[in-house]
Amino acid sequence: MEIGTEGYISQKERFILDILSVIVLDLMYTGLIEGIALLPVVTETTRKSLEQALLENEEAWKKKMVHRLKEENPEVNTLLLELAQKSKDPKAVILAGYLIYNALELALEEEET
Image (cartoon, rainbow, N blue to C red):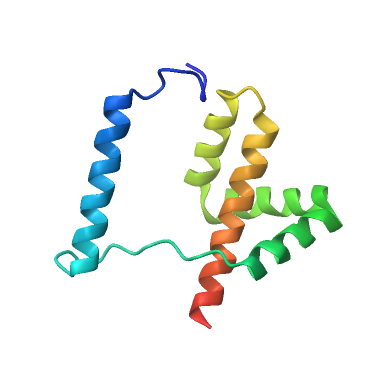
């Protein structure tokens, strides 16, 4: 089944996932569960920095990300490739995955400083 087609996840399943997400976030907020880290927030500065790097030389940026992901996080790389094979626009899926991965890295670095 292709990603993005109707029926990929039912409305009932989506509703259950939404409810579970709210419950987990509530439990984290109230301190009843610990050890689950939230993703870092990608700021406008981070987004603009990433856009600029991509616009300067998209091909070089993509090549760098391909090599980094293969080495640093091969499971994420495999996931992106599998998702890309199931989509109508594999290049867009790969690019989006690299952008999000890099944006989260930069956001995490920003939070740590």
